[in-house]
Image (cartoon, rainbow, N blue to C red):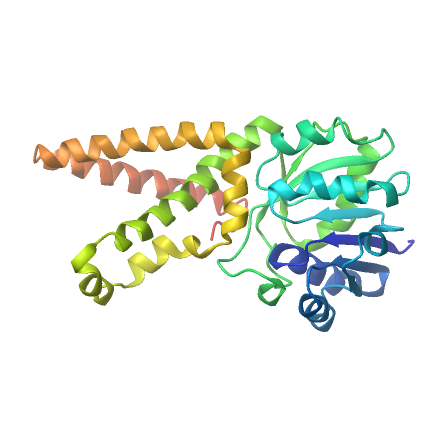
Length: 296
């Protein structure tokens, strides 16, 4: 087996965790270079073993790479590809961790030469913390990892990517571009917006703020945990998956309006049925998905 050469663009939580996972499983059989913005991030990435070397110079990071893993905020992915393209060798595979896929591919398909391959990816994992300091080698284990196949990459490129990335311990699945974005909106994007909305609701509690804070417990913490995620990342997601997110937010508005109406009518049965149906559906979903991947 020849030595793998991987470049990670953006050695933060996801990029750093990928590096840790692959170094843990492949050791010296993989050489990882990382692009970091600050000297402190470079030093930390090397110190914890997420990369073998780190630099702020894109040429130094991507030259000789077999695979380039792009993990900046979504709106920075295409400009980053434009920047690194002159330094990529024939046959290089580009993949990413972007939470929206159609926006990226519609632009990259006009940009990439025929001998540079893009395979869209989305690891469905994360933490409310960000930065390489939060990286963990087991972050991907048993988590769903979407690979989008309809981006014109040849089968051998996908096989080469999977030969490396299967060492993350993730459960890989495939979706089409638009299908991914619709599903990601329901499962990930709208819940993040809703979590932030609950925090905003608390912020608008006026004179009751101090009293409300005294009551904060597990329910509020669990429901709003993801509101502590990176603001740049989530602003980019909303800008690049706006159609699906807007549609699902409007549907959520309808659901909340139904609940408001039932409460105002003192319709206890309707409220009971609302909670009972949601509990049954969630319990069934978790029972089903636990056989596929860790839903936590």
